[in-house]
Image (cartoon, rainbow, N blue to C red; front, top):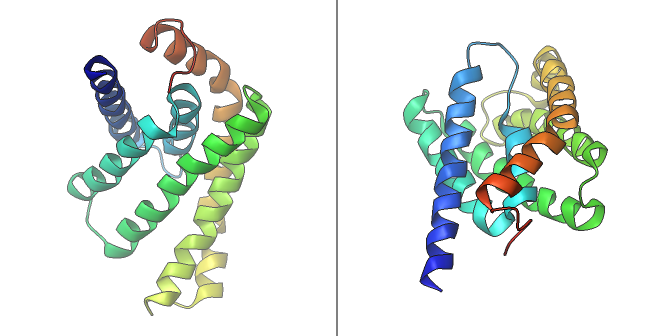
Length: 173
């Protein structure tokens, strides 16, 4: 039992590091993000019980690595755990269908696009519709890039994570 808990903690820590480093490495390219595909693929490979703690660590560490803004923090703590749960549900329905996960990445980008002006409106920072419309140029590359990256990277990354990290045993709970 201790060995299983230690493995779960190690996988969560490795996934958190992957998320933090993935965002940092790609941060110089505007409107491109890898967090969505990484959360989707990691959840499929390791299960949401191992990835959800990593996602929460990522949300917390993001505040220390980038400028703190309370609305972004709130959005992260809502959006990324929700994506983790949606990835788990999608995996249970579609198993290893990379097209289903590419569409999940697309839906995630659209959801993020709507969440941003909604939270800004709730906290009385900006009006909803103008902020939504002004976010279109930012959302399109994120949505298209997330769709393509997830479609192309799902099978190879899923295979590597399940073979190398889980020792070829497939998905373990």
